[in-house]
Image: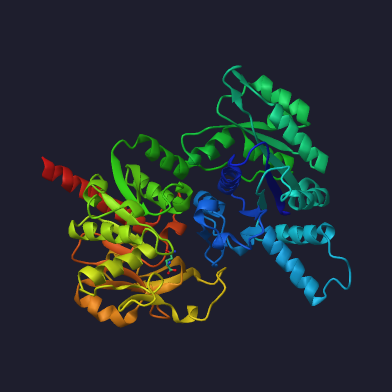
Length: 541
Ligand code: GLN
């Protein structure tokens, strides 16, 4: 079949969940048997979000091909299990950089380079890039920002042109907000009408409207919206607040969003969606009553989006263990020898978060020492793994002042040091060790048992590494290197085998954990935490 292009835009306010709607639609089309992918266009000037502070934009997600991407790509993968790539996330910055590079090369043959057609053509080329591979039946393109933003204008103009060129092979879904005014006890559709008018003024007629709402929108009101906005009455769909984002595919299917997309794009129906495994996940999520409490020690705890993939991976793991996840965010800057016992008292397992820089690092060492001495299941991820190594060096190997050269370039014991290939890099953007690499696991180790395999592949995002010069000393003292890169020998996983579950990974297993394929190491960790809580309650009896 010809590739169909679905555009998802948003209006009225931001944060309506365009990413969740796009992901849900992708899930539905996939489970009907179509080949689907999703891409996101972000209207900011940064080349990618890799250099953005997590406070600005939440977590930076990393794709298998080593692209630092918007966190929405994490949603795409968690919903669909499809690996995204550099082509799935494009920013204004990248579009402009390509156009400017072309201009410098003289590719425009002396023409004046302008937003229309040069920027819009480059956007269109990027939209079609995935379609041109012939690998997909549907390309869902999410346009970041809100209709009316100055930044989004070139993307919307490109979308208008593409809709015109592609005819029935293109479809526009517009997501808006219907507020409920408590004082008047009324839902208000006027902002939606205005938002659609704004789209129409640009020359885009939406085909489907999705109305985000906290209260059920009566059918008569949806019909009124349809009439005002030139949309078929059954193409006005509501998106009611759901108990979990993973309920949204079901809610959309109940209102026939997937059927509608097939009808409006003249696509032959090849099958009904099969939701069995998805429903099983939701059933477990809703019926779990017992809790497992995990403490997440990090410095960005005020903004929970900063650890989005980790919290989702933990939730998925807990759900498959039939437990409700209680995730306690513990601010590493506020953790001290004096309060650690109290702060970690209720946790059944502790995750030491990834991160950069000195701030909050000492609190991570305090947490690690406590967990190690009390045999609490502990999972160090990236910087968290590096902190495990440093804490062990200081307190078990007796290497006073041991550190990572990231925190202290003059440390007497560089147990974590800059990777050789990173030493001459001065640009910060996109220059870390990024993306998926193979890792060979030691037979019988915790990760080897968890993955059920000795050769795995996980994603990375770091500059510093375990310093191999210290390997023998660590291993003799009980901290084993149980995973390494088969080509370079870089240490990827450490484990203290004398403890029940004390594991650190240089890679980020959270990026590859999805609803249907939860990450095995997170599952192993959560199982250990459950066993620990059972031991705690037995000994309290
Ligand atoms: N700052 C550390 C490094 O660059 C760890 C990075 C991370 O946790 N993602 O190696």
